[in-house]
Length: 447
Image (tube, rainbow, N blue to C red):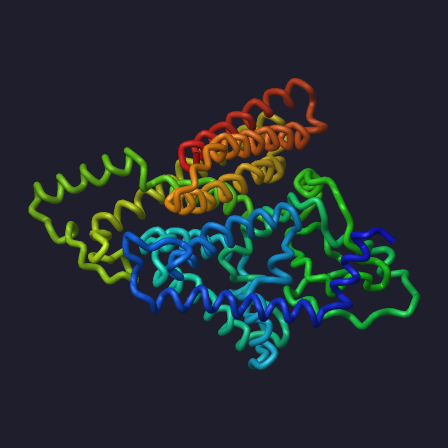
């Protein structure tokens, strides 16, 4: 028995310890989320080590979220199954809820994409990375929604995590790159006649017997060793992406990757320093003044609608909010639509339009790198504010982006296996253009 298999089986044996860890994470999450929102805003002299609000900001946006994303690439959705406070609370609530069936509208596959896009957009409007009240509203609101869904639907399950969580789609994309996963041998499952363990509670409502890949599995370890057919194993990081043609197609994962992760999220990281945003805002402001429409220039919106902290000279006008929405929507359509068209062209040149989705998924490393670099920019900013020089950071960030681009190019080439030679090279050129198009936008946004 390999050490990975022993680790997976150990997770099943020590389920009580994992639950204890889950509640410890819930407690830490609640303290870091709620307490800073009740404290006064930090002044200019505040530092990480003497101000809980700044410390919570650093832990949430500088450590927590960037490295949760990194954990998806390294360990699959282990965070979801073992550590996520929303998942733990939703499952706990569902044990005491009404246990209703899941309505058809709730099972719509587009909810994670819509949730990610709306959360990203709203977070920019209220400056979620900078203010504790905004973080409480978005993260706390999501947690409350997870508990309510748990109280309503299916006892003992994580309906929120499976169908509605705004980041579950992103986690599913990144988990495809993980070098480990719980593999299921369906034939062995059917033929096993040895004494069988009780059927585990698969909280995200998966059909364990037919489970393939790491994108949907929460890696909680509850099913490890089941019928001798489930075990934690190592695999190639490219395996799940390259076998995409043999998986059931799903349009929403491609839309999320191209329009949400590469398009919208990169715009969210970039707009504050964008000269195009400034030109857009100035042009609209001049037009409004010329037509004597002055109310959009006022900054009297409440903080929960647009950033409004006049004591820190940080307030958005109605025009600011409109320009942010317009800029991020344009970023999503331009970057995501550009990659979409280029990959459609690559599939057409390859002579197989069904290759579009597999080719689109080869951009997953680029999307993951962009999110990690964008969020970790907060880490770097706060540490530099504390006096850390970090001269080595910028070359490392460029190296991560270059590595992601190279990985995408390799996956694109491998995905075109079986295409005749001349068509393969022509199609790969268009894949390369798409990768560099997305890579250049990420360089501008996060480097």
